Length: 470
Image (cartoon, rainbow, N blue to C red; front, side):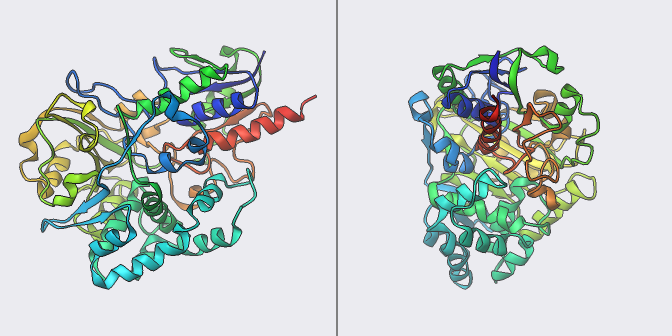
C-alpha cells in the first residue's frame, strides 16, 4: 500500500507528490496523458522544429514560487531565461509602457505624472516580497502569516476593485498596463480583489522577473518528475482514472483535477455544484519566419507583450467574454515570444509566438481574424511572417486538458469570493467529503498559475493527516 497516490501530473500534482516524497512517504503519480505536464507542456504544434507551449509560457509566479525555490530543480535541467524586459504594453502610436525589473524604469515609462504614484504603490511591498508571497500563497490555514502587518496592508490595497486602485494614476499609460495585468486571470476589472491580482504580477516581475524556461514549459514539469523519481516516487502515464477503484490501495489520494472531475471519480455527487467556471480562451500558436515586427522598440525585447489600446478597450473585451457571452471585436491579448531569449525553440532565424484572447465559456467560434487584426495594429506586417498556425478554442483546450472546463485555463472563475474561497467556502479547502481524498488543483488556493503552491499546500494537509494515523 502506498502512503499517497496523486492523480494528475500538472505542476500542482507533481509538486504535491514531491513534497510528500521529500518527507519520506511512498508516492505514486498517475497521469491520463502520455507525458507529464498538464498546463506546463511543450509540443511541436505547427511545423517540425518549432516547439510551442500549448498553455503556460511565461512564468512570473513560477520563479517566485516558494515551493519551487525550495527544490533543486536546476539540477534537473530547469533554467530560467530573462529578456531585457519582462513585459511590454505597446500603444497604437508606436510607444509602450513597460514592466521592467527596475521600478524606476517602469515608472518612467508611465510619464512624470504617474511615476511617483507607481513607486509609492509598490515600495511598501517590494522590500518584504519574499515574506509577503509566502503568506499570500500559503493562505488559508496552511501556515500562520509571517508578517501579518504587511499582509493586512496588502489586503487593504488589493481587495478593492482594480478600477479603484487605478484612480491613483492620472494618465492612460499606467492604467492600461495595470488593467492588462489584471486581465491575466480573466477577471472583470471592477471585480473584488482584482487590484491584488495586478499588484502581485507587478511585484513578481520587479522581484525576480517574468522569465521563460529554456526549451519550453515542459522543462518545469520534467524537472519536477525527475526529482520525484530520485526521491523514490513513481510516475505512470497513459493511465486514465475513472473511479477510485482504478487506483492502487493508498492511505491518501490527492487529485490535481477540476472539482467536477473529482466529484465524478470519487462519487461526491453535487458536492461542488456551486463551483463556477470562468470564461474560456482562444489560443493561436504561430511558427514565424522572423521576429514579430512590433512598432514599439520595447516590445521587441520583452518576452511577454500585452495587447490592448487602452484600459477601456481591455475592460470592454473582458466584459464581453465574461458577462455578455460574446466574443470581443477587439480582444485583449496576452502574447509570448520565447525566441527573444531562447533560440532553441525554433530553427535558426525562425520564431515561435503564442497568443490568446478571452471568449465565453465553451465558445465554438473562430477568433483568429480578430486576433490578427489586433496584432496588425501594433505590429504591421505580422501576417506576412506567419509560416503556420495552430488554433485552439475552448472545445479543443478542454479536450487536451480535462481541467479546462469550457476552455477555462484557470480551472475556475477568478472572480467574486471565489478568488479567495475555492473550491468551496471552507477553512480547509484541500479536504473533501472523504477523509482520505484531497484536491490540489488550481481550483484551490492560491489559484491559477504555474507555481505549485496549491499542490504544496494540499501536501501539508495530507502529511498532517497521515502523521496523525496510528
